[in-house]
Image (cartoon, rainbow, N blue to C red; front, side, top):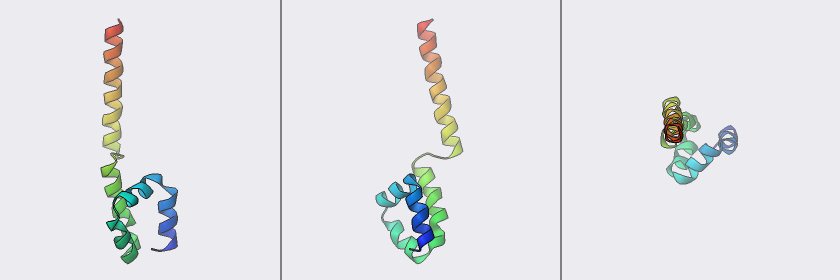
Length: 73
């Protein structure tokens, strides 16, 4: 694995954890360092870090707050 790819992984804790959990990516990154972009896409999908996932999570939190407010009033 080349140095810039290693630095990119070390600087992103989600990438680092995903690489540790899915060790098959070591081989892929050693053969093709440009596949880090594909790894990031899969990591975001696995950890639900996409924009749509974040919006859904935020809306669920708002709904929970509304439920608490309805109970209190």
